[in-house]
Length: 373
Image (cartoon, rainbow, N blue to C red; front, side, top):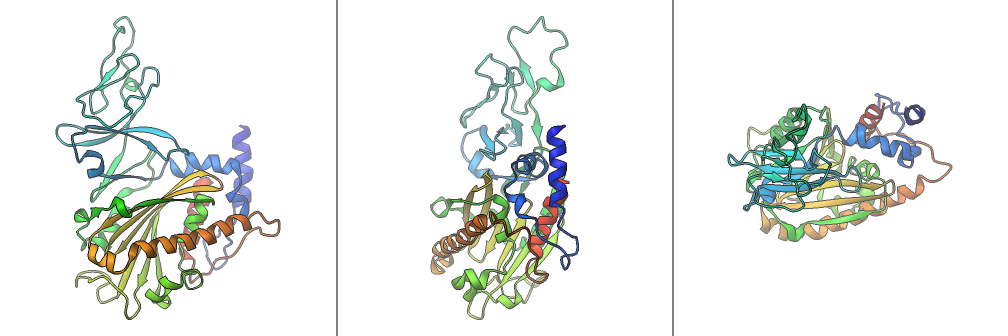
């Protein structure tokens, strides 16, 4: 009860986000440093959300039938196991034996069964317990909970997602992605590990998302990027648990060749920046896709994964996209880490939103406040 009461007090202090952006304040500085809220976010924000796992080919492009992963290592730390059976059906299971809690799989492997290395409990690839040594005298065994817990698994194109306690309608997310992106042969995009990397950012994960969710800072922070964009037409569209920023190209900039049936046909769009609550960015460019996953580590440290998929490698190299992406990331890190330090000031409590330029941040703060309430 102590934790619950303390959380209620903290949530009352966070009740600053008005549904009307013209009247609303931002979440207060305390949100980004309060350890009680930090812990509460695990169950209230991340456990119910859809988390990106990777693409199907990266897990099961070879002979493997089981693939252990840890969901949000160093934060949720949930051991999971992806399996693929003879019918190529993929499942997401708990990687914890239902006998004594031992981790079932330590490495990707080709197995027809899942056998616990501690006491020999055996499961099939769908998670059903099939055999347990020395248990013939156990009464009421097996129970339903002796089988491995199966998590919901969703696939959009080649990409896999799961949720520990899903309460967000995945179909709404998938439908919006398809509405704008169905013209792209995304399944043909090549994963490019040579252009994929990770960044350690000394800031709260939500601050990184705050910065991503508005183009307001582009003319002030990203001078090279600003030359490629028509900032005056930069726009944000908000959906239930996601939003989209659309970057339009300058006169000489690269842009998509959109088909006549596309909702944006005739517009010179150079980027679709999709954000899926709470920590996933899907950035589509004429050369391909950059997936950004924001992984919380502690209230002042985040790991950002940049995962690159190429569609037009010649265009990627011609635009020197790898160097530009790195430059933009370093510039973002500079301002985000500056805000992390600034929030410690005794003189800053909360801010206001630009109704024109910060719709995405207001949407994010509204979802955070709602989830924690």
